[in-house]
Each structure stands twice: as C-alpha cells, then as structure tokens.
Image 1: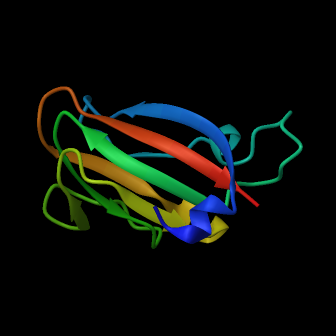
Image 2: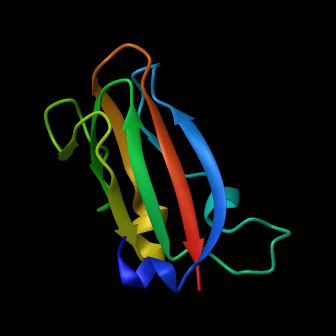
Length: 106
C-alpha cells in the first residue's frame, strides 16, 4: 500500500451503479460528507466491478471510445479536490457495472 495512504483517514465508502450506460460522477456528500468534520476528501480509490470503464476529470464527459480505460477489478487512485469533483465515468464493457469508491481525508 502506498505510504501516503497510510497517513490518511478513511472516509466515506460508496458504490456507484453505471449499469444504465449514463455518465456518473461522485455526489458532493461522498466527497465532503456534511456531518463528519473531516473536510473534503483528498484521495479516492476507485475499482470497477462487473465490467470495464472509461473516466475523465477534465470537465468533459467520457464516452465508450474516449477517456482513460480501467479494467474490471483494477484499482485506480484520484488525488486532489479538483480531480474528485471533476471525476466522471461510463461503463464500456459489462452489463451490471459498479464502481467501488473509498474516500480518504487528511
């Protein structure tokens, strides 16, 4: 495990259902839960389950042909508030695709 993650406090965990084929991002209350007193998340570990995805953080929606490609079961990390708020993903392969997301705070 990355030593940087060992210094962070685990925050919210959520699953995002991508099965409908639409583009999805993180809800604001996942990044910055209203009652946790930890402030916004700084890192998210994201892992697709049930299929492959494409994602972007630049404000543009990914499509099934554009964006960073992540395979089923791989784990990726997103760092920083801008990336977390700009994150958007879409399923590419699979029928029932979910994103497992674990947020971390300072």
